[in-house]
Image (cartoon, rainbow, N blue to C red):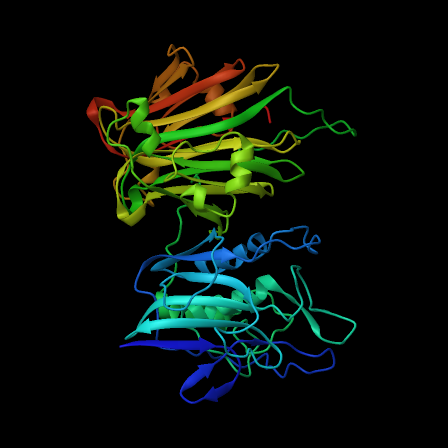
Length: 502
């Protein structure tokens, strides 16, 4: 039997529960307890996989407080917030031009004047209306009350001249998605899932405990690099240092992507005093046209910060909310099943993970391009993956741009990973090629290298004598680092590049 259940408000209408998010007048008290701890579940959930929401909220006539004009862009971070705190399923939002219809098995997000013909009720900001079969959710439509006032902002609630709240649409959507995932209202606690909108704009411990009771904890992403960042050289002059005449502008890595720990993991570090705008891409199907056999058919891209929190994700770039911005960048993927995302990132360490939709496997490539010319720089690049034989080696690429040469150290790690990772490659060897395919440097076992003193002086020598490293000064251009196993050895390896002149 398929049941239809709407969600706002705290009233019962003849076997139909209505739970939504209710607004407050400026003088009203929230009535929450800082010490209470609770969560409530509907007993319904999504089985597994990716749950897609069709976003059709349109654009605001005026710029929103956070600078956006797109309601879709304003609500999308709420999906990322839930994704970062649960396992088993992941949410994604795609732009849509369709309206909401109950029973079509499409999860629609729209402004509406009614709840499929029913009244919203006094003070109700939004409603989640779901369809279920047994304990499985089949559809969840989120309807924002078009009679209410919305904006997009951070911080305490903003109230209008009439004394009623101008709701932050992101935190309202955060609440409604909680319902769409199977959470009830939590009464008497300061949580996103309280029935009253409040100054709380992020998930509380009770919200997280509730969602993890349904879907489990998220899988912890591997760190971008198990090695320290090179120590920056202090500038003795009292005036700011000039921008470097050359810098790292593009990174890419290609390898065969498996499942579990054998996914493609690319890490990078941004250094400087300002954010850096980048585009990241996960490429698979278009590699076939380039002559690569066994290319991944549908890669998914995830981006994490150094705390392990999901920053952004994408599956199928053309159906994502950033499709127009990605196209405008000029480096959009050439296949609709490939993934891409644009992010403006604060200085720090980040990890990009590429895996196959539905646990599929195949050769894939992760790429990153800088999209601005600000002072912030990419100073460390790393990629971890399983190294095989033949074409299944680990291939890392990067581009040096500017007017001067750039001095870098490139490392191939394996044995030092074994303390925290099973199946590490025992003896990796490293080769460096220029854009003409000419080998410009190579090493096997850095401890016996004629560059040993330079490698030690870089402050980031490998930890194990069987690991490899080269120090090279590179003219502007594109370069490729290839990591293989000595004598056909296989296992998980890591290729890294450090900018020695950041």
